[in-house]
Length: 344
Image (cartoon, rainbow, N blue to C red; front, side, top):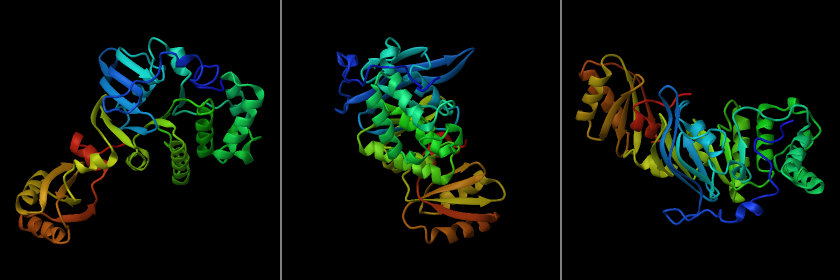
């Protein structure tokens, strides 16, 4: 039976882990709950999964690692939760060195992995109750906490059901409830809504918003732009094991330097057309070609830009097959940084 994804403790960080392990203030004055220094993971023969990562997560925030599959997000979370041993560098969670004191670090973290790790031999309620017992809680306290969390996570009606009877969204909510059962300093979620239907995804966002409102520090990995924009106070965009940019979602979108993005689909040499449009339309501040489409960064109103795009293209011998307008998004930021779209 494995009711927990972490090792047991005798209570929360108010126990033996408090002595000498308080998180120091970060460089910006905020209390750090997570800090990494040159954190690196190499897989033989020469795969660099995470490359010299310096990171700081503040108490009480939702911090996101955004990037495509293979960017190094899951490996980073694995090192911070003691499941992956770093090749070099240091990592601290709640002031505890996760490499030197992994057992102690496990006491102050909650982990929700990508795969379903619920105990299939237990009911929904028992998965929570025995998790508390595993972490040293008394029978009464664990029983009360299980009842409370089932209510909070909208699972009370499923308390006696086997976990195999749960939908994907319900199972994911139960894993989050189990992960916070022992009141961890920081909750790690690896792609928490991957594979969920839109309704279940929104329900999970609401749950995480409630936890955030209650002061829970959360670090999540995701490749969903909308999820990162909706949930995260700050986020780091990752690719090929490195952080390319780190800021609030609004701050990242401001780096685009445009009021709108016009997407142009056309036949012919797209690089040549992009250069033509950028040089002949005053409102276009930049143009690029990504995945078979031209992206024009437009300053000001786009009302007169769209017909001008068609006119300039036709004069140059091109046929525009589709036009669309978007606000600058995290996807735009990712494309500017990497030259490609963020795909699964």
